[in-house]
View 1: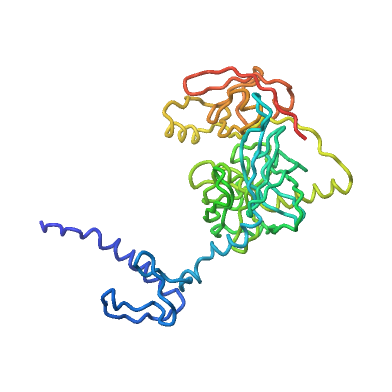
View 2 (view 1 turned 180 degrees about the vertical axis):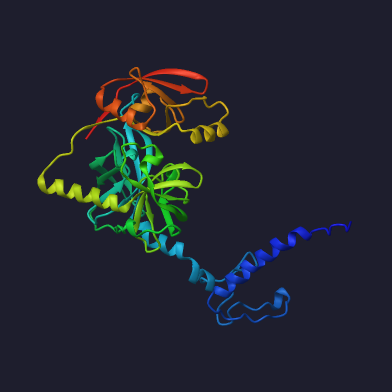
Length: 384
């Protein structure tokens, strides 16, 4: 038997990798070929530009002072960010402290400006009941905001500030024209870090709400692998033209995030405008403050992989986020709880929870948390 040559298994992979690199460079536009010079001593090293002074940092020559060929031609993400960022805002939500008169920071989120006079779109779940909302622009200027409209079924909200100048705005693109594989950029303020940028592609343009466990939802969400963290919610998802094609809404796991499409945002704004013209006031609604999914077998397996103590259950409603400052948080509900029953009735879908909230002023909830079974009472908030 002929002995196997060491390293022979690496050759096919290496050839494939070199082929991809070669193909990439062949597709690039022609660039000037740099002249190769012999190495000189530091004392005789010429400036990169013979007509410019040689700036030094700590005795060493600095890099190119202006963007080079590759940076100038291929940093399309940076170009999008420069165009979009001035219209992205950071939201801080305060609530009254029980121990004093001073407001305390309860949560934060993101939003984007849609009118020069200060209308801002964000997610409904970013806003919580009876809170003071503070908006910070990219310039650092801060304004108090008021809620103009909110739709918890769509998870969209409209707030208003009163600026003394015209503000930069973002334009709504048509999400119906979006294609799987398109580059997208997500902007927001995760962990209160203003204007944080992530990029990715559109994984699918129509992920039905029912697939996400939203039984009464008729929204087809945009799925993307762009990272959306806590605080990114309410920020824009834009295409390479800088047009908003969605609003960052939820992250299920790493590489799987969802955005409400811009066509739904446009419809929401149109309905608000129509109500303003007719003088109609939105009805008051009950609000629990949970983001939920039905406990499917796949979800159960994923949660058991992340946490071996996650309860073994065949049905229930999985709480993947408790919104800060809401009735759900005050009652003691936590992220990753599993709701088993409400007011003595078993629940297995998010619609079951929604109906219970609609029909009752007080909810007796049984939840599973690890090996514990907890009995909680929740009184939903009343919001406009």
